[in-house]
Image (cartoon, rainbow, N blue to C red; front, side, top):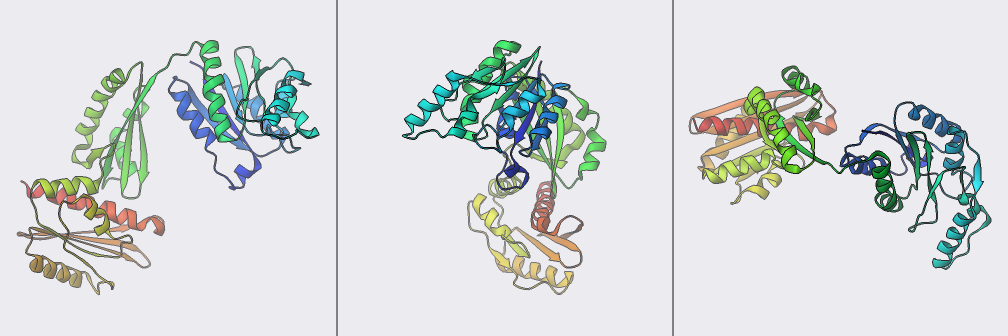
Length: 387
């Protein structure tokens, strides 16, 4: 199966003036045909650096896809860079120039002299018609490898990728459409390194693959299968997912679109539990998220001042619990000083259970970390309350 490297070209990308959405789209499109992306590189409008990147990529991959740098101005260097990388001259194609003229005519405009640059492409390359823009594209074949140069304008790139590039790759490399099925398991209260210790051997699998993605207070485990159909992909994933549940147990709280908030809301509704909330320091408030998934309004108290002590916070909880006369009360307080600390309290008819955790990550992630940490504590207490 061929491999791909993508080179996105444009100084504006390096400066952060616009985001690179092209490489993500190309990667998602090609994976459905079983093509692996080995590397994605962004380079400014420098023909020497672009040429070097293409030469290096040709030593590693079968397919090099460039996007951008095909316009008419002096700082559109891709044509020359590809020619240099493949030891070819740029040649002028009259047919391409006529296409450009017709495109401008359709727009009610007249091409300028610098637009003629766009009719030059590397010698012996394959022109690709661009019916949605003025920049011709091309493919340079080098034995079993190829360099495919596409426009940087996302709408043009997407159209040409589907209309011309995918059919070309299917013919050249006898590609067959594949289904890729990804299942994401969500865990909380375990760090990425701890999970890696437990399932590290599974992360070396080739199909399905198993990968980790860490978030504040949560780690996702992605299981991805490639197969000729979705049913077959699911069959490949099932034993891997079962093994992950076996190893990680109730540290996995859900999968795919399931969230902690939704799971807690469903539990409280299904078990007809009267619930109240006391919180401090979360913005946006946790109440906003819980209200969206609860069948009834949530009695809540949002403290407008930092609790003087943990004892005073537990007293606020006790007061709210007694006033609402509910089954369960949950309190969460995020304290951000020199350290970041979350206090979470679960109270039911049997008394209070307390969790205190400190956070060493970026403070702008503190609220999400506190919510995930607190909600997972609440989830575990709710499950324990059934025993």
